[in-house]
Length: 418
Image 1 (cartoon, rainbow, N blue to C red):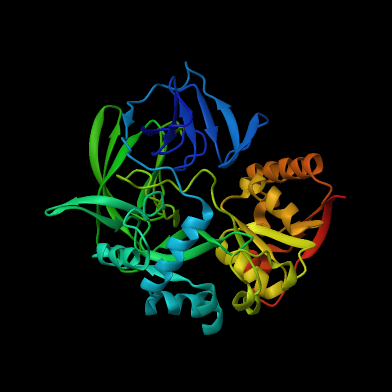
Image 2: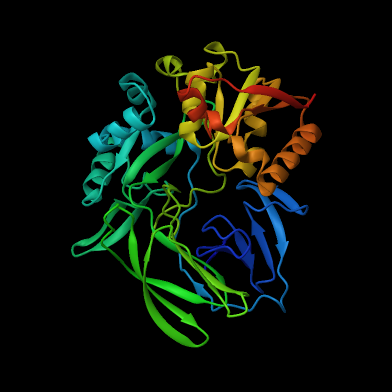
């Protein structure tokens, strides 16, 4: 298990490898004894709210869960700078990054955005090599050589001629996260080639040795090493081709599946020298209909541009952007379904009276997400006098609010909290 020490929480570590509760990487934390996990995704009745969002406590059975070898990842990260500073640096970055034709085509053809929508929303491409040249150009636009300190995404690399600034993250399509005063406070990257991961169940251990050429249909493949009953074997797996093993009596023994890993990642550099983590707090994204954006001044809330008495909430920046355009409503894009506490104060500042949750159509059929919605309703009932509603639609019309809009439909709204 790979861990990174949390400076502000002595005895606690961020889980860099897979969380033993939710199975995802990043955000979640575990204590020194490996008996308690603060999970950001799997709901429980024991939870607390932090600048990272709602964290759910899960207690591991020390007798049932074997302790794993711990690798502590050292970090010389810098505390994240205030929003006004992040915005100044990220605005300079938008002048130095472009949008590739590959990503433009994706936004037009797969996301059904117009050129004007793409332009005013300032989507960008995180390039491959020679990022230090971009970091140098950004620095030239700023007033001080230390202005990149504490800005997630930037970090210092040691080179042949000494240290230099460069940029972290995988190559991909970048989405800006905007505060209620139109400050760009962070970015998410839709990576072009998500890492492959193994999904293992039962009495089997395994690892990916290397990715190999895809098959004739374009599915990704990898050479993997597995250990079963003390014996090792090399296996070539194809993406989404699940292998299940049963004993002669028909009893389940193990299953293995090669899956594409996480597609969306925060642009962050918390594990790098002089880098910064995206957390403390995690950004949220406020999306307005695109015609409003040219008139939305940095430092000003948008009430003069659009009625904010009713605000919609979904997960992710692109769904918020498309939802705002389709319904002509302000939309918050959360970094995760359970991170709704992040927007409580922003909603109050906007003068919101009615919150409409517009998560994916299958959210009411997934037990974990359904439980999160229940906790969300409880949270708003206890902390605000805002009306809370849930947007509902048939999944056959589209999974997300963006798909629904593309198909020309609008959701029904059901009141959860008066």
